[in-house]
Image 1 (cartoon, rainbow, N blue to C red):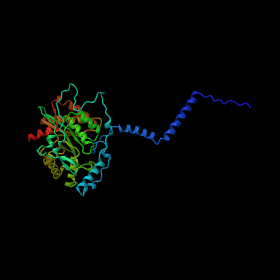
Image 2: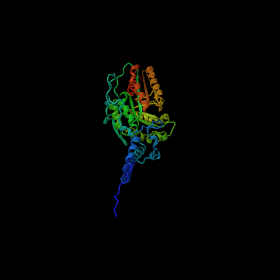
Image 3: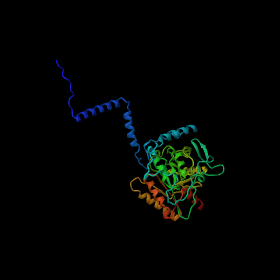
Amino acid sequence: MRLRRFKLPVLSRLAWAWIVFASLGGGVALYAANDGGRTRSAVAMAIEGVERLAPPIERRDAPDTDNVGEIAAPAPERLAQPAAESDAEDMLADAVDAYRVAEDPAADVVITVDGAPARTIGEQRAGRVVRTWTPVASPDDNLLRRSAYGRVPRIGPDGRRPSDVYAQKFKPDENPNVALIVGGLGLNRTLTERAIDELPAYVTFAFAPYAKDLPFWTKRAREAGHEVLIEIPMEARAGDAEALGPAALLTSRTTEENEQRLDWILSRFEGYFGATNYLGSKFSSDRDAMSKLFARMDAAGLAYIDDTGAIERNGGPAASTTVNRLIEPTYGQDQSAVRSELLSLEKIAGRNGDAIGKTYVNDRSLAEIKTWAASLEERGFTLAPASAVLAMRANER
């Protein structure tokens, strides 16, 4: 018998293409099924990378304008009756760690709008006439003492006070002086870096105690010429007191419990010239509680800048004053309210010779402050550090 030779079937190019594609697809599927999940992990990492670059949602209903409101504060009874100083230290530290803000992942992304290299700290654009400034003094060991939670400010053996040593040097001129405190810094790394790099040196910064990496950020701020304050969360009349975090000062706590929390707050970083309240309308109405707080500020050689009216009601430490205007940042598209409030601050300075405003940072308010400050001298006003206006007022008493 004669055998017939086997011949491959005649297929079109399209049919061969489909066969090759199906073979490759089957090979990829077999590889993914046997690589221990590495392929799925790579895809998940790529998706996570996109999510991590999403801008944070800003809100003003809690100390953390990024994500503190999503973290449940620990139960206050954990801190109520410490058995000993070491136990109290551990309990408060654990509670604060549970509340602490997660690091902003977008902070490692550097974006330049104009494509130009980033300017070094303190460098000004060519052709712009500015007042000269110097970095704020670094922390001095002689102005610090040990507490259960770390080093806190004190008056030095030679009588030097942190309120003087860590104040930005400033020489007033004939123009009315306007000071602006920008608070809530440290909670959002991207906004904090922008504020340090973009705002003029004479803008005073206030850092939230729950923020991460505070020694790093406050050092950068001082090197850029910004004097700094520490924010003290205090009980407000409205809202949940626990939203202020485990270290907040509350009227329901004993003097010892509030002092314990104040020690922790004051130990968060070094080199600040004073403190300012965060909220606190209810706590500041308690005369006895505020008298103790003011006494502590004075004994530590710290300034205190208030926006609740507590100084007018109760008096204040040697270096203390009240802001003229609390500028609430808005979170919509329209920033005309912030602009209007800043212009109102100028009018107060025009009448009184000086004014202090206080606001909190978000993306759009930061842009408004930058624009306002850049043209302030053109309108006949001088941007001054808050410590300088405080000193002027003290000399007028």
